[in-house]
Amino acid sequence: MTPRQRLFFIITTTALILLAILDIGVGSTSIPVQDVIAVLTGGETDPITRTIIIDFRLLKAIVAIAAGAALSSSGLLMQTLFRNPLAGPYVLGISAGASLCVAILLLGAGMFPALQPITSTVGIAGAAWIGAAAVLTVIAILGQRVNDIMVILIIGMMLSSGIGAIVQILQYVSNEEALKNFVIWTMGSLGEVTRPQMIVLAAAVMAGLIIALATVKPLNLLMFGEDYAISMGLNIIRSRLLIFTATTLLAGTVTAFCGPIAFIGLAMPHLARSLVSTANHHILLPASILTGSTVMLACDIFSKLFVLPINAITSLIGIPIVIAVVLKR
Image (cartoon, rainbow, N blue to C red; front, side, top):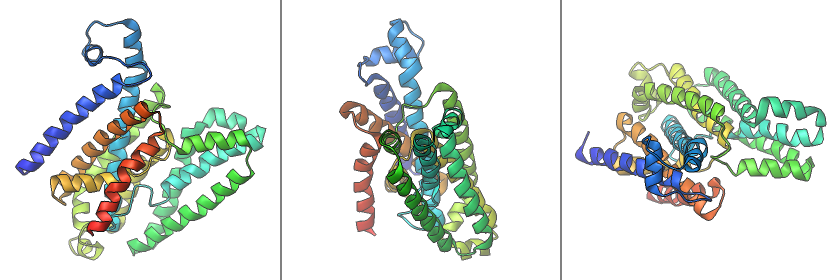
């Protein structure tokens, strides 16, 4: 690791801690930094302040960190696998599959009252996860039969377009209230995750990150193309399946609990790559995880300050980075 890379990890880790404290303090009721630190370190503070921090804001900050890490790392996996700088975590249709099941749940329940019990039992998160997993299953089956990775990319794009058309039809025929609920879900939110859901989210993201870290060596080989990786003895089918599984666990889980959050997965790997100046995934993957978490916390702070959907903030930050990458290349 070079001195520049060590400095990056020190500065970014410090920024992550400071932004997490600031994120907990910012909200409809501002909480002084010293009170936040006192609660987090077990010190004495007002019981109401302690309740606000522990029961609400700390949970949201953890969700922001997990979502940023999951989306940025899954974006890096997709960009390396497809050797395409504009590939993101949702390129396989994961977001589209999640959106379809949520649309069926929310928009269908509005048209057919018989679906209301399913809405309360399965829930939006469960529906989104089912949709994401279903798309992964289709992609995994196709991946066993297709040798060219670009064909899989095209199939994923076509799946997304087809699913998007079905979602549009459901939106067109749904009633006003159901349509409003679905549109709000598509804007993304970090504050709807409950404590029991947080346990599931954290476990799924941790599992996805562990699998992603296990693919570091294959990712370094895949940078030079699949033919080179095969010549070096890499099992392409197994590596693809691991990468697809990690991406679904990471991006699918975040989409399930937080809605489709744009541009973090697409832009953060590029930002991390430019900051650490390396293509070695032993360094680049942890750097992407740290960068995504830090930027997501910053986005959440701006979202609270300006009372805007998280998707609007991530898009405004991510779009200039993506444009810069396109112009540079």
